[in-house]
Length: 160
Image (cartoon, rainbow, N blue to C red; front, side):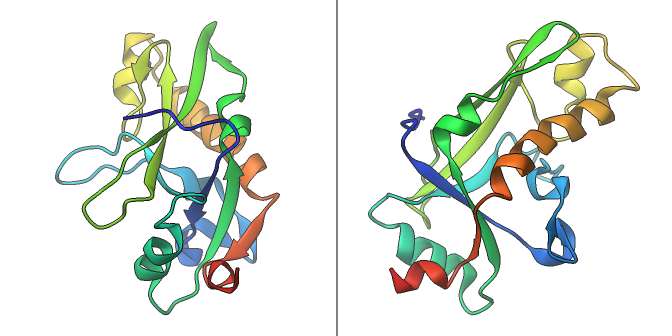
């Protein structure tokens, strides 16, 4: 997986019923999920400047015209956060799939351990127990602060 350039933008599609409340972006918009096939390891986004971006995002959203946010990779990578004196490092990498060539992911490492799902693996390595939910919320909050600056909707990209 290649790291994306700091000048690139990525787009996160928002599912309003779970990621927004009365027009306000919630930290749930950046939650890593536990799934039957395993915990998510990154937050799915699309590369705005990729050649296939428009067709990928319009295919992904078909007719719903969901809200989405535009985030600069450099801003995401420059988030400064520490947990128990350990660095939290955000990175954005290309993760193309068979269906979406412009697909990418926001990865979060805590003290060198990749954050997956609810983060228990990364936090247990640091002997963090009850505070892990608070730290997960703080990690997502940093992304919300960047994301809420540039909200739009999927069909807006079809106009360009």
